[in-house]
Length: 229
Image (tube, rainbow, N blue to C red; front, side, top):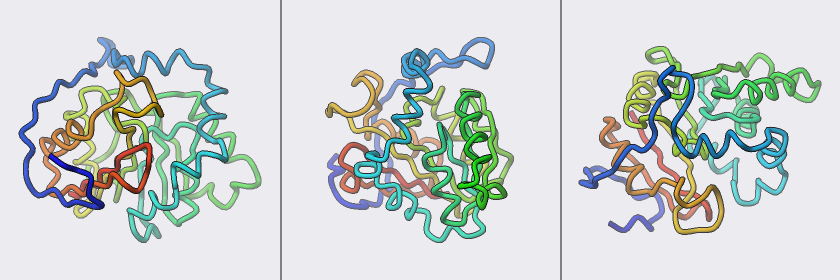
């Protein structure tokens, strides 16, 4: 299959085999996903510095990514894997009510700390933090208009089951935007932790999303999947 077309609509199934390598810890709180074990060894302060680096805007193109949701005024978006809030505050600046969801309490504390800063005072009523487990997005049925998952999809445990719960949390007509690292390039996590575009597409179709749009050109380091309910 050739995905190197800009916004190629996928209206058919890909019969690709895949193995969901991520498993939930026995206590339901931890994760056996090697990508999570790898990241959990990293220093939080260094991660925050990397996530918030001004140079990130050059390759991440946050404005272009956010524009994929269309008009965000009065929409509720979950920033899943929000980290230090790189996309959270940008979504709110575009008028969205944002649920900054993450499994890590230290990242959640970082967002709370930023919300106390005068710079972010106008966004306080638009941003809420929500700690979620590794195996559940923690959404009520039809709670959100959209879900943004940047550099996080490969971290999810039991991805198809996880995304089925995410699908239930979307309103009718809502969409999920997945941005994750391409395989075969040096940028991003170790190659063994990356998830191929083929695998991600197949999983999303198995979940039950009715339409996928794929973009491999907008971002040099990452592919983009837009999944509509």
